[in-house]
Amino acid sequence: MKKAYKNPDAVTYYIKEREYFGWRPRGERAVKFAEIKPGDYVLDLCCGPGMVSKVIREFVGDKGKVIGIDISPKFIKYANQLCNYPNVSFFKGNVENFDTYTHAEKFDAIVLLASWYWIKNKDQLLKKIKLNLKPNGRLLISLSADNLKNPQTHQFFLHYRNNLKRVISETFPDIDPSYLDCLTTANEEYFDEIISQVCHEGYRLCSKNETKRQLTLADKLFTYENPARTEWVGNFSSKVRYQIIKDALTKTGSELKNLQTIERHTYYLEFCTCTDS
Image (cartoon, rainbow, N blue to C red; front, side, top):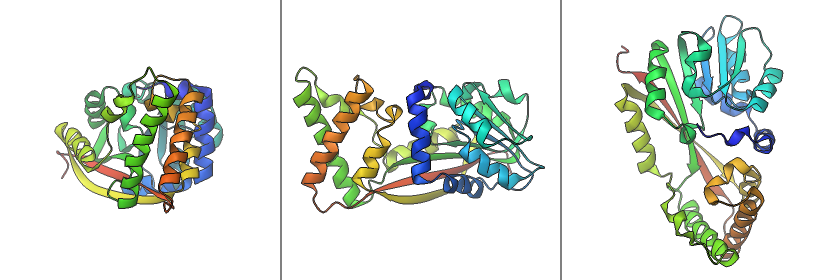
């Protein structure tokens, strides 16, 4: 699993970002789309600072149980302070080895929010999750990206990618920025590939729920204060990556003078196992 959030600065900025945009709705969507009920046992993989776990705990109540696992010790420390209940436990560790911490516990729901890209051994994790779901249990995976189905956002995406390459070329003449063209594009085809990969491991898609939100260029830049969100830019320091993005966003804004907002969308993919009734 990616270790970016072992970086204390990345953790600090992530928490700052969640507070800026509001974290409670994400937890409420997890409860809704994973069909979590009072009394359920829920496993929150890549739980981060425990904000989603807190909302889930409020819903499952005293008779339920929540376990959160994340690789960042600073996230786990924050989570324990935020969500201090006797029936909630947080563990620092690689989510691919979650069974080390859950001790054969079976879950009504397992959620993996905004972290699919960073799981190294996806097939192995899916196999392990399947073994640890109760009958009729649910796996919820969320995936977020700029919504390229939106014409204005798609235009932004093309200009922004070109401007990133331009800024890198101007700043570092010896570097060929064409590697940016090889980065995965989070479009509908990519999302369908993920669904296919999960279903190949013995799951079926129960529901596909799409949510949308609008970001300004300033909002977009705010998210990139987090060094963990900029590693894709290239092998530069976090400060240099941030400056490259800032310059590219500024250029894009000057080219697209009518650009008001960029549309982000998130898919909440609810899966059950093929053996479920």
